Length: 136
Image 1: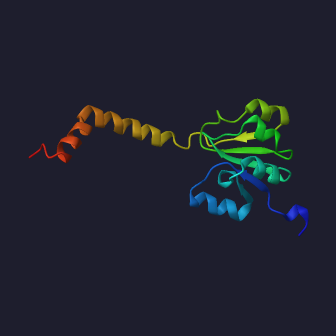
Image 2: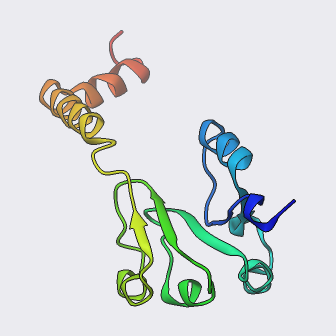
Image 3: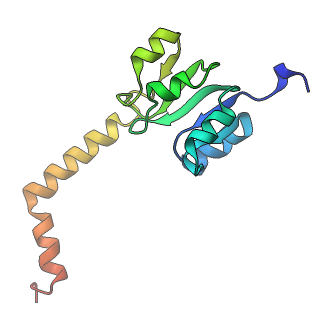
């Protein structure tokens, strides 16, 4: 198989749900950093071919990791935040950083309204009252 036909190699920092992991495994060569016992050794072994990092907002990618990957082109954050990604290191190398903005906006609003209703109606205390048998 010619080198151009090989799947792109991705360093995966944390686990993803099966509905996303299965298509990623089908399209790319996924190197599961989070499963490695010797993370430094694992990173060194896959570093020469990795072109992307798949991470989550809370896990990110620090400067040391970014600098260890000479062919790195993109860091994809599975989530809204990218505070844990060293953006300065990415800018220096021209590495693109992506995320999924607004993916949870409506869910967060729904949860906020639900929490206000629970609080205003005293549902937490009422639930405890029912569970401990006080309603008898």
